[in-house]
Length: 367
View (cartoon, helix red, strand yellow):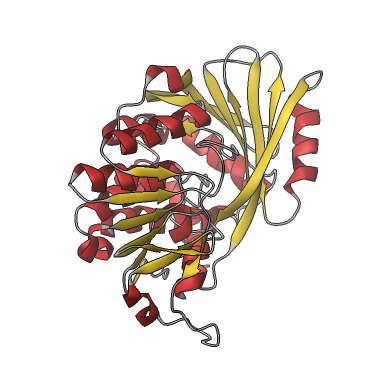
């Protein structure tokens, strides 16, 4: 029996893949329904279709252009080789939960993980040997489990209980859904407002506008709204913690495995975690005992994302202006338009080769 803690898309996709291979799987979700609360922009690249077939009812919009905007207002517009999609996260999550259920996994709502049976509270680093009883605590009661998969988010209780949490760093995301007139075919990325910020249209009249920062994204969000959504009506606000990818994060200890946000498997450039989390879940399903090795490609892409983030955080407003000007002038723009940003290994060297002047900005990783 495999216990998956967390009924989000990564947890349910793990359950779907494992149940499809004949494993007995229980999913335990602490909330009363799948897909709530919503804490995500819902913007996905076309890579999602290589992972699963997204129901059309989940897709709110398709975007064919992206606009990168510098702190000083200089911008470049990219024509995407393949459209990105904006999903209704509640429906998207429910689709994957339904896939898991149809494959034979059992979904348990209002079911909170509260620890491992037999672990000693006095231990500074809990011993997974206590888990050999093959029981975990759900709502304070023991249930049978040969393996536990922690897919329970950035503050993962599974990771903490198993001594896998480590010294992870978290940032905060804040987002507003705004009724306003917007370009329904293009999303904006703003550099210089927090660590990362965006405007993603759900359609002609509603946009998702958000900011990621280390301390107070709400103040920055208010500032961004006053700039890009004048006269707009805020329909609702969302927010949550996001982990910064940690290359040293352990994924496995004894019979406990971490996946998704619980494993810090989030792109450090855009702070998106759905696609890397789903790819990690697929790697896990190919062999629990070989999960770390099977996850090597996911780790590689996330490590490159982190290196890009380190360089980006050192850029000045003028350097952002310079980069946008350089990309606008030559072949680098074509590279960005054609390659999938989920896999920097496929474009980062092409980008620098196409425009050698970008080398000095990449070197900021080690400066």
